[in-house]
Length: 253
Image 1 (tube, rainbow, N blue to C red):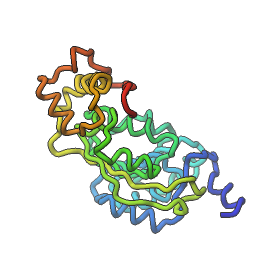
Image 2 (cartoon, rainbow, N blue to C red):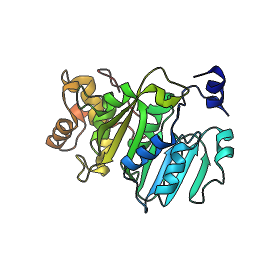
Image 3 (cartoon, helix red, strand yellow):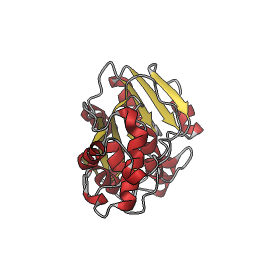
């Protein structure tokens, strides 16, 4: 890609971690793969140049496109009748109080905060999220082993899978790594009741601190241990607050 094209791809704001889809055809494929229906409410987190937004507007009943850069928001404003533009941080926005889906090309340096905002609280009415993320992140989040704190907690309410690998040259500006489509889908039967979410987070946090085999247990094994202990925090540990993600001493997040 020429230097001039690389500069234009970053306009208006020039965020280094935001890599836009180069092809409208690829955007259409991704929306089709996500199974977006004519009655769906869909959030596009990190709308950027609007390629995904345009395809979502064709497929869904309503779209909320969230973009931090006011310049991009100004460019997208008014282009689609069924799209609401929100200028703000996708890791902080208020979510709808009705079932919704997410189809988004996430800014790579904001992936974890956005995932936490989406998945930490099972009361959020998220049905499914199809997310473009760095390939390493996609594989880490989808593999059941070795487990991490966040994956165990999120796995109580959502399944995770990688459905597609996207080469780095599918984006502009070109990132240093390939990307993948990471899909979270709400479980029909949760492994832990949503009303026990805060207690379960405390249980998992304590387990990662104290159990040598913590990373060998997948989401199902963690939920089973929690049930066997009657939904109590491990070894009398205090439950963690639902709004924050504790940093376990063993393993990553």
